[in-house]
Length: 64
Image: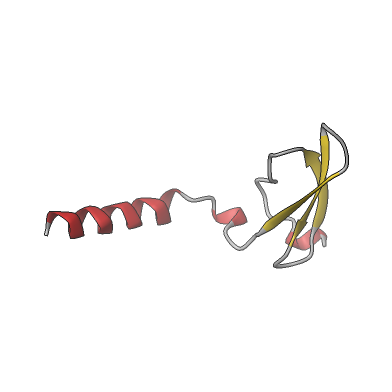
């Protein structure tokens, strides 16, 4: 029973603390150099450039 309560609490915390601005975004990274990458969202098609290894933190759906 304690495990079930722990799982419910963990699920609620994840749902509350996740970034809602990028919840639907699924970013794919295309590396060009050691420092810069092009990021493409497979959900909406938005594209942006950024630092290698760090996905965008905001949804760019309106800019696609």
